[in-house]
Amino acid sequence: MAARRDSLPPEVHRALSEELARRLLAILAPQPPAMIGFCWPIRNEPDVEIALDHWRRAGIRTALPVVVDAEAPLEFATWQPGEPLVQDRYGIPTPAAGVRGIPDTLIVPLNAFDSDGFRLGYGGGYFDRTLASLSPRPLAVGVGFEINRVASIRPQAHDQRLDWIVTEAGAWRFDRL
Image (cartoon, rainbow, N blue to C red; front, side):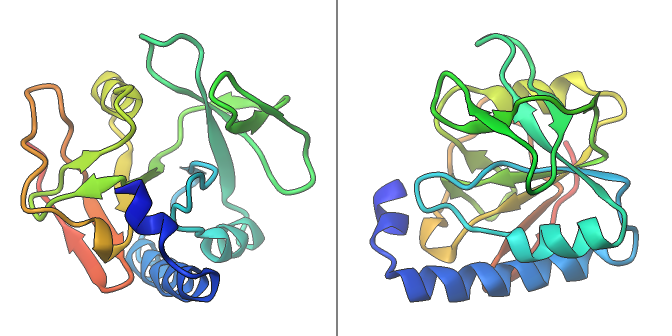
């Protein structure tokens, strides 16, 4: 799935990311969150910085995930451009400081996804553990490209259904199980 994203020419990736970001802004406009957790795009994942910049200008805080332990839920630390980042054990930029908090909305990257609202990540289970542990559970919005849609990810009992999946082609809402 990552190879499919990697095959996108930079100008196509940029155009798809921009369209996806516009759709993301539209679905969250009716009820703007107070804090949005997002992931630094790695391995040619969609870049939704346009949406993040819009929300920051509107006073919405943004936060990046912090891996505390391989078996623990993620924590989130506030971050905005210009603040220092350090690389975590996976080489992903993480806030060097930042106020810890629980976002009310999570923007979750999709390695693969299906039409039932389930996703595949990189296999660590971080987002499933995090979503299962938080009460109230944040709104979980998966972002990915249509080239990563599959018939089924064959969800396991621990897999958490997303509330939304947003791609360059549209936005789909799902009921939680």
